[in-house]
Image (cartoon, rainbow, N blue to C red; front, side):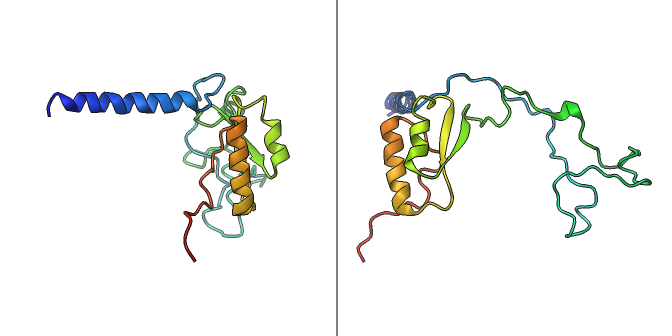
Length: 155
């Protein structure tokens, strides 16, 4: 039993590596660097429901955030932006592309190593199934391929 275990472990690693090699791999894997961990939140958005969290620059004449007083919320600066080459890129190394019909999938035929398909939220289960099958034929990766998927049940 002691000698069998490493063989089983090795075979599972080989199987996983084989499955990975069959899946579409991104063209390039550049390390994605996030300069700032926290997203800029709008001043006083935590105090009032009417003030949404999306960033707006404070413009009041006495505003302490605009005047950059010590201990206040930090305003975003030009240097907070991410690298242009990795902006909007997923951790997998692909860019997302929203799919609503089979024609959209055809666009990714030549770009399947750069873009990954994501089926829109308002697509029915029947159409989703068709889109996932067509994506498999075109060798296009789909992020939400298992959404609205049910096992066949006898009614």
